[in-house]
Image (cartoon, rainbow, N blue to C red; front, side):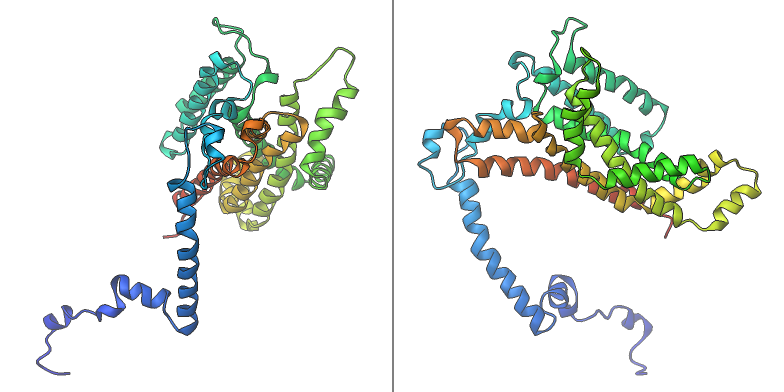
Length: 364
């Protein structure tokens, strides 16, 4: 070693600038070899030829608050199909002067969901807030008390109905799926046989068939004069369908637990209920968060299938707005808007699942 190079001088020596910072990252990730360089240049060319025209169509040459006549003479997007029909797309046939009620119900729901995503608020107060908030949303939507006019559920639609079917459906399907998974692992023949039959039967049919059965076939078996709300029937079909898929995901997590976990719980005298609640399920549910969220995201998107049984969810109200002769031909803009709303919901669930995985991770 050169005696002139002291420890102090070695500490201040830095790597070459070409290997650090932005230039170093680009060299390592974008121009690391001829193939990587060629692929990077191809992607840059593709973005250069598509992004500017798309930006021009969506923003520069677009119309936002004009009528349909102006839009037909444009080369850009006609976002006016959304702004001019916004309240109908969002609230459907809900009475115009009462649309503040579904808006308030959605704000309550968003507030509860926002608070619930913070684990520091997971306590009895949050449970009480949900127990108060859910009936409050139902009262706002239906009315009939507190001086609110009654609004039949047949007039519910748009985004409130989509949120109702998805949030309540996913909330009810998850614990049912856990119970079915435990039932399939049970040593009791009757419970195990019922769980297996339920899971395999429901997973063997598409959601559309369950919706049709709930909407058309099921009412035929009811006594004369007895009816069940169509929204409730669709909600039950979504819950039944989603729970079967969640059950299989949770069963995979249960099978991933080592036998030593059960033996340790038995050694300290825990009952089956306490073993599952305190030892097995917390670990099993944690390791299946990614596939569980994937099932929930699919179920959230599948709520749009209720359009086939004439429920005016967000997709159906958009289709009705596009059936107006004034706005025919502007379906691209309308469906892009709907896609953004669905993407926002799916991305929020995915983002929260990653956050929850990091919070529950025991690997450091």
